[in-house]
Image 1 (cartoon, rainbow, N blue to C red):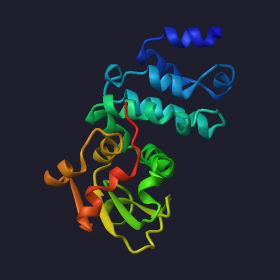
Image 2 (cartoon, rainbow, N blue to C red):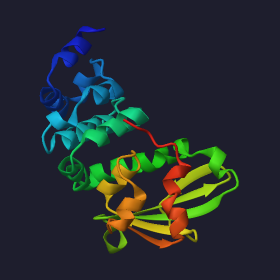
Image 3 (cartoon, rainbow, N blue to C red):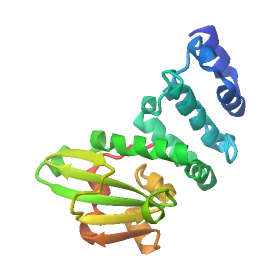
Length: 214
């Protein structure tokens, strides 16, 4: 373990976030920073309402400047752990920042193909349209299209296919759903998730994916 890593490990969660938030790209280049290690060590409960969004924003900024700190470096279980222990206010703090919201949602959808269960989808052809409330797109939604075909899941933003189901949900509930912290039927019954099209298919949609757990 390097001296830098020992220093990072010795910091309290809020101190670590504050350090990363003010870190320059030149300083980051000299430090042994592992996004997944930090993600596994961080307890969102100890960061306050905006601490988690500050941490993710710091990773995004440094990545844009050339550091190897992309959110894609977070393991699936690490990401699930962060979402599991994050409060609704913390997740909302991420989603009200347009750039950070786009970064996180794009990363989630990018990973969908790696979690698709081929044993359950080898003969399936289905287009799903997602509408995430509070976005900058048409009607105030961020929109994604997922195409599940022959055991492969692809994602685009064109919304050109004929959907088997169109799902409308808040981004916070969506994050909870895809990390096994919410149930699609419960969200539907409580009016937090709306479905247009094949309701039975939509109810079992998450079972087509090997969702990560904390």
